[in-house]
Image 1 (spheres, protein in one colour):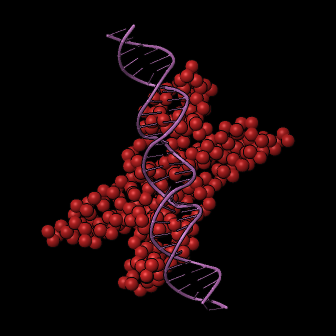
Image 2: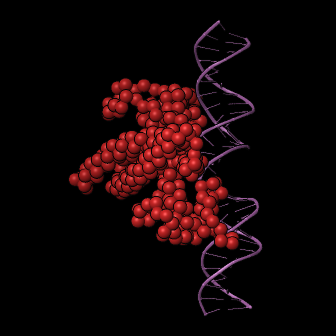
Length: 151
Length: 151
DNA sequence: GTCAAAGTTTACGTTAACGTAAAGTGGATG
DNA sequence: CATCCACTTTACGTTAACGTAAACTTTGAC
């Protein structure tokens, strides 16, 4: 938000299925940056904050599918107003899942429940805000109509 | 967000109908602050940013129903990730409406259309994020189940 | 080989949205 | 009258999330 632009709406063609390691493309930081309409700086910053961990080829960062998906999820989280810290919490839990102990798994389920509740509250906020915008819209159109009749 | 708490969910009993000036209660800054679970500082800051304009009784700020509603809308906007600048834009337009000229009214309609589009994008983001959380949730429960069988 | 493009690290700068502290005012109350 | 309590203004501090600039390396094109 506040970017006003329609930014960050890029995506792949939706199929993120769990293939062994088949399509395994890689991306440079610049490619990802263009793909999601962010700057390389942003991507490096997310890495510094523990949200991404690309391989290196010499000095250069090499991003794999997994990294691209993470970035996508991160940006979506951001659009929904979550802080990077919150996003990291979920992401790290998710990564620790395969060999996770019971305590961690339960903690992950807790976090998810919290986030879900937040999303529900947001849905309600959106609903209310829409109603109010409908009202304003209607009134503005009325006012415009009045002007048209007189002028 | 990132407040983690369930903050700011207060409201009146939903009926904000347009009564002449009947119930016209007033509030102190402290009352409003408690009512919406924010600090007085926040409310003063919003005033400084042009989002509120309470009357004064000597030095003290006196808030009327209109101010309370504005604060409520402002906080709702914030929860949805809008900046104070964006919120102010809509609010000021809305206030300028009654005697607004055609140009202003059209601009207001434009802004509303933009905000609506943003809300729609958010709905889509929420939908997608929910799907992914469902997935994570299911996998975490599966993993927990496996642990239960073995241990 | 050299030039440009894209990448790297390091580090200081910026903005929004408040927090926090200091110092003073006004009225109700024991 | 002293003492709270809630309020006020002024002003500096803080945090998140990057922006921006400088100085350097790597690499493909010519």
